[in-house]
Image 1 (tube, helix red, strand yellow):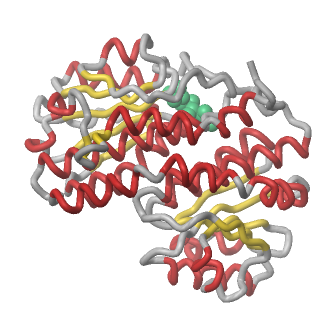
Image 2: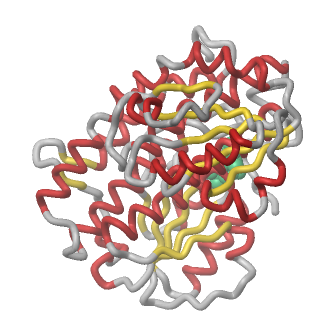
Length: 365
Ligand code: F6R
């Protein structure tokens, strides 16, 4: 049932404040402001020298965000790979390892094969899945469910942000168990994370603005997405969503990689989405934007008030997000990124919930 929405995707985007609230309250204890992941001990965070993560598509990009978190907050090195690569590259895995698999459907063939490979080699297996009765959920040693509810639209939206919420909890719990995250810092981070449902609502308030700027975009042949740090995976996610929904060719890049090739693509016909909250590396992104603007590129900047003030006029359009801390930014900034792809596709008249050539659950290689 789509309720009052035209598409399941729109409904699922708008459900995020609520389902993120459900997922967060499952994994955080708000009376003590601590991460509280049942079954986290199965992964032996305090004994690991690395954590393996494997997944496909958008779920892989959630894993990529979490690499920044596990490394920063838990000092735990993460090796992450696309499941279709991981399963065949014969990477050494042993009983000293833990491996995390992320999947909305819990049925993705490559992710399942990667899980089985790690299991055969003795690793502890954790799964972040949205469908609790799925094969991946059944075969894992420990399941960390996302409480996103059924996701019908083929393009993953609410499952992605709920995956991020679960992964944030695992990263903070790992930090505590490894003795590298102080109790004060954990409490501070958890109280920041509790703001997510209300911040997500505020982010959705930018929708009409985004709808307006999606109309000209629907005439573009190509688009570029740029971001740094945890917003780099979001740039990849923005490009993936735009491709699959609107069939516009799009690429995501780490902003710092621009001058190593993709800048050659920039001209006045190239829309460039820059995902950049005002944070410690914002200034670096501003200089990337200036390089794009100098070559006529048309920038849509997704940032906050301070970021808009400090952007040096490089952006043609700015989408303003509420102020928020670093750890919540990739979860909240996912919403405008989803809305850009959604509204562009609606303008183009493509089948938003069932894009051509795609299936919701990829059970074959
Ligand atoms: C993109 C998308 C896909 C899935 C991928 C993995 O919007 O939905 O990239 O994320 O096929 O699917 P799951 O999460 O079911 O393993």
